[in-house]
Every structure is written in structure tokens, then in C-alpha cells.
Length: 167
Image (tube, rainbow, N blue to C red; front, side, top):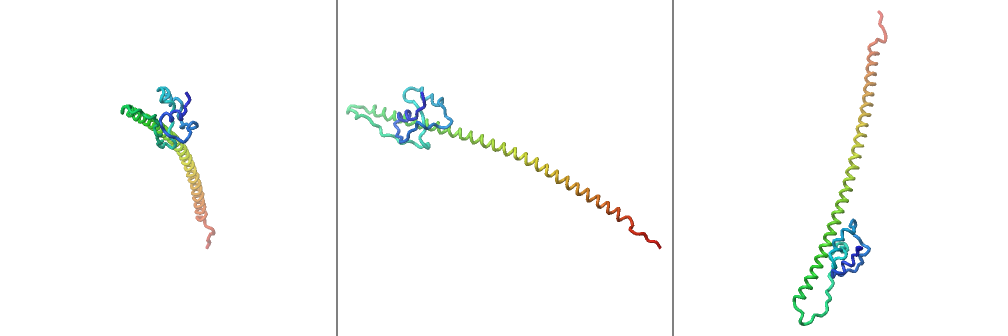
């Protein structure tokens, strides 16, 4: 049986101004609703109210009871109405809970992917930093060696006398 939210909601004595046939909660599949379809009669389909708000209750339309109708009939009608509203509220809660769990799982995966990307970028930047430090160190070592060679060369030149004195 195909999922038809209006069938379920119509049987719950709830007043909706919106057609839910085109809506389907994200991530939910037909097998999620099979439990309600096989319960027999009352559960044909399942859908949450728009924006997860509580749906207004339609006034119960009954044929005028005969003066001999007992209070047990009224209690049964009230009890049945209460049971249907409770069932609808439970179904909305389960759908809302499942959607919230799916959103949390999606967000978790999103954050895990972001963490992995940031860790990869961190390793790349650490390697780049290490390479740059090595290049700077090598350049400084070369400058130091050149400077040392220059100092040595000058000291050798300074140690040789430029003129000789003869007396």
C-alpha cells in the first residue's frame, strides 16, 4: 500500500488545511510505515503536521443520540478520540525523533569530514613550514660560511705586510 498521509490524518479526527500527499519526511522509507499499514483498519498512513506543530482537533460530528443512550457510549467515543489523538501524537513524535537523529548523523558526518580536511591541511602546512625552515637554515648557513671565508681571507691579507721597511 502506498504511503498517503491524508488517509491516516483523516481517520484521526484532525483538521488540516494542507494537502500532505506530496510531502514525505526526508530519509523515511515505505518500510518505516508498514507497521501502521498492517495494524488493520485504523492505520493506513503516517505523517507529521507541518512544522511539527500540534494539529487542531476537528469537532466530533455525531448523530444525535437517542435519549436512552448510555454514558458508556459517550465514554467510548471520548476514549476512542483520545486514543486516536494519542496515536497521532506518538507517530509525530517518532517521526520527529527519527528526523532529528538523521540530522544529527548527517551533521556528525559533515563535521568528521571537515576535521579530516583540516587535519590534512595542517599536515601540509607543517611540511611546508619545515621545508621553509630548512631553506632558511641552509641559506643562513651559506651566508655564515661565506662571511667566515671572507673574514679568513681578510685576516690573511692583513697579516701580510703591504710594505717593507728598510733602513
